[in-house]
Length: 327
Length: 269
Figure (tube, rainbow over the protein chains, first blue to last red):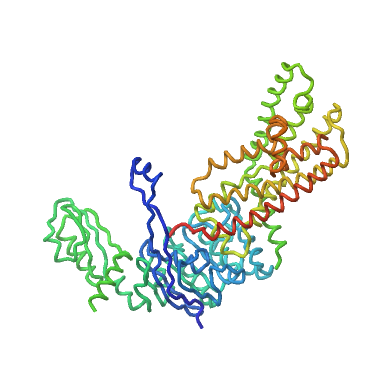
């Protein structure tokens, strides 16, 4: 059985462009040019009951817009969606009881009050039974290790602590469907890991369906067997994560800084040069060569600083396209 | 569904919220005193130099009493959520209410009443003092009927003002920068409601015209019920009219918000 069915979902926004400067501001005062942005272009997919799906894509790809339509916040321009038998944007109360949405960059807790107040308010909003409420709160706060912080004002909490509170507040009514929009953004590694473990547990324990967007590959890798990649509003990939895993893990980015000028020709044999000048270079290096390449470069070049980074989502997606057009 | 419990929780959060900012709370109390003080000096000067016992049908004592009462009532019914609502609309804070089985209107109203509870209590204490003093000075003929009706119409004023402002807030769906707009409208509404000085100052025709608007029923009317300016019959009639305005604005607010919500596009991609 499917929990989410999306057909040709489409959303366009009207917006205004303003060039920099006072003169253009004045011009805009009288005649504004309205432009249309196609945020989501005929997207279709199905998500099964209890599935955990990762929604990947660069900034502005339309991930959040899709989530907003599927939670009923936005009306689509056209297209259909069926979520647990409801049309989300009809905003039926029965539908609202089924799900929760957590946004990493938006705060849903009451800023000036302790998190426990917001959680209690959610208990009342969703009409959660007293007994279940007590048990859930104890369980969730213990798992996330924040029992001590429940009575601290939200604005005094760290970002990671706040995120954990957001999760507790969102899960107190045991939703069958959970939308997560960048839940780990800005968190340190231990917090990221904790949140991931927790979500995995929730997914397995309660059979909840999870739709998650993220910038961090690790989120998707740990939690989701299936990945949907969206780029410029359209679906770019829909399938098992392990099949595209290599696109993301296969290459590494090495950033170098030199004390003396180094010519580009000298670098070519170590990897693909992405950018660089006499004193700096950014190289793309295959994962399996990383060790020897690093060692060799440290020996040969006057390196004063260097870092190894993952390939960004934007890069990976362009890799994905390159690969598809090659097939 | 157990909505009573939900609204109890929202109400108590409103109270906590008003106490969280204790300093702000006392400042706003103090803030009520300043305009009253300024007006006291102005009226004292006006009456002294006019040489007349009564101006605009108010004796000196009556006008001071009106100023104090109107100042207190306008502070009591004042709303402070305009900015929050405009912010919710502009920055997408409305989303968190849209996705939950709770009504934004209900949330705002109950939380507003919760935030007002303590203020209401303090105002009541001040009023008892003022009523006691002015009756001792024979400015006020204290009648049980008037006191009861006053307490009653004060709640009506609170509700009516909430609804008017809530309707005005819907404009934030259409205008993106609205803070100054609120400053102007709230000042204008306060003047038209008789919050600054009795409406008689504007002349008889203006008073008559204003009777057809909801504004006098938030400050001018309640104060006159207490002070005895309003006749017995007009008092009951006024209460009915106030009730009518409340119903009408309740309906308008539903309508405007439903229409605006359709247009609302949550911010941030």
